[in-house]
Image (cartoon, rainbow over all chains, first blue to last red; front, side, top):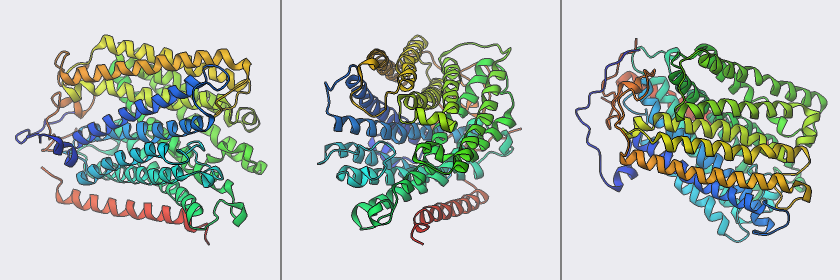
Length: 524
Length: 35
């Protein structure tokens, strides 16, 4: 792949606060998204530490049960909608135009609005904790009848979801319009970097899933205030209907969180294995296959609600099918590494950890797809362990791999490799200490979302809490690494940064000029 | 250099189709339970 580098003759960077308020530049907006996600990551992380501190030993010692329920709910909402999703939109903003040779996103002003909806949405959610009745406490799934009975904090949450949904939808439309229309000459769809492909698929998932969730919470709102009874049996409604609608959104949401991470990993591993990605075409089709399957498996979250045997069988087998495209991806990453000249800089460490630990989460997911087995696992800590191995080990580790991989490109300076490795090892040790014991707790019958537990669960909970504080502390190292790179305390980064990486972004200087690819590069 | 005319037309067409799709999915996710 060859290209011509940008025409940099007009590269005035606006100054002051107005630069960030009114910016239409994809790099600025990407930076805003990434900082917002990181702040939300710390806020959600602090909530998880409150949860873990309460669970350090049996009995109630720090917070009351109602506040505990608010913490589990808001922690999840903040992490899913405030940290992981905006984080990957930040990556998309920074990387997609540079990777496809476009001067910017297709709709720059819409891009600005997509971002600036987020702080207001986050503020609404956090404020909900301080209104009479407190914040939402029904779990991130917002199931009625609890959410119909909840205080005004639930209304705040519904409007939060509406705003976040609008932001995601506008962002997705922008990403699709950019990828389909703004590619450089010669950049055919099947020449696009995997990160761009996975984001294209993710954006379609968002467009199909988010409006359904918006519909569900709108019905919740009308049930609460406008006399409808969609989910109220007293008026002929059915709370199980909400579960079906929620999970029709909720399961694709899992892949919305993970597919961009797969894209990042598919960029990082070839660079540090010094080999082209194995099975590019199969990676594209596997991503599309995962996206399709994600829409036909939603009721595996609801086996214990009760459904016809044929329904249980369908959802069980459909869920098991997801292992095939996911297995294709894991095989391809391993095959890329096979006999490669591998080196283990921090991005590669995160990428390998992501593949290994996500596989643990994938395998426990497979065990839960089996309907009769799921009756044992349902609503236990086994589920909590499983989804943290997919969402933290998959999405967040993928995001961290991408952060270290592209940070020198974004800032123009190499990050501190020693601190990066400290961050990596403390995160990985803390993560496994936190979540691996939770498999055993769940199998032994400890239910999730409770502030107190039986004595026999004490030791594993203590280990889990210690691990969570190690993991939480480690994220402050990430902050230090990023601030040091921005302040330019490391070595100057070259254009390529790494050893002969693949992609148009590496043809640009580090940091790239404010406006790039004003003249479209030619891709051969 | 901003987007050229062909790109602008393509973007406009893509946005129109996607926006209609989103509105239809949102509306249908509620209306089907009212019918």
